[in-house]
Structure formats: C-alpha cells, structure tokens
Image 1 (cartoon, one colour):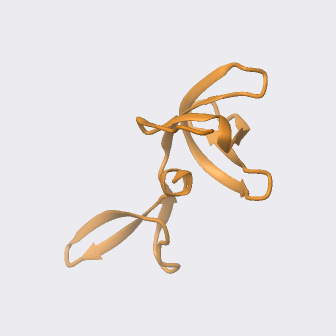
Image 2 (cartoon, rainbow, N blue to C red):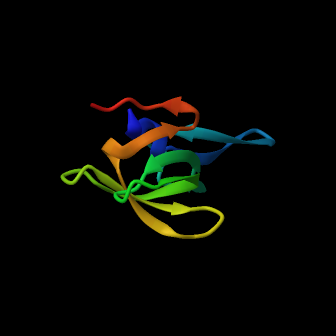
Image 3 (cartoon, rainbow, N blue to C red):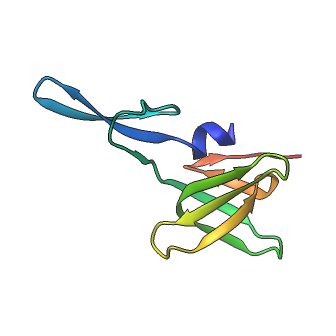
Length: 95
C-alpha cells in the first residue's frame, strides 16, 4: 500500500489543444514527467515524530526503507516503512 501512495508520477498528456497532467504509477518514457509529492508523518529511529511534504527518491526493498527528500527544506532522510504513521491523510497501521 505504501508503494501506491509514495511512488506516484505525474506526466503531461496532450489532447488536441489541451494539456492534462495525469497521475500514474508507470508513466510513458517519451513524455514530460515529474514525481508527485506526498505528505508523510513518521517516527524516526530515536522516537521523534517528523512530518512534511516529500518525494520518494529510492526504495530499499530488502531493508524495508525508502529514501525521501523533503520539498521545503531539501533534507534527505531514510524512512523505515514500519514506522510510517500517515501518508496523505491515510493512517497506516503496522504490527
């Protein structure tokens, strides 16, 4: 579920005279595209709650972590998937 919320792309689709930005998981290769930012709230390894709008840069599947860059500050952090509390207003329950 985290993958569908965190790894979305927007790409420009031209329909006649109109340009439409479409959100998808797999955009076409030959178009203008950008990653869609998402809002995340998570607990760090030290127990501090952090939140903000960010973009997913890289996913470490074997470690269950993802590397994100915050939009406003530009800080790059590693987020553990099992410590994520909320993504775009959707509460995540992990056990």
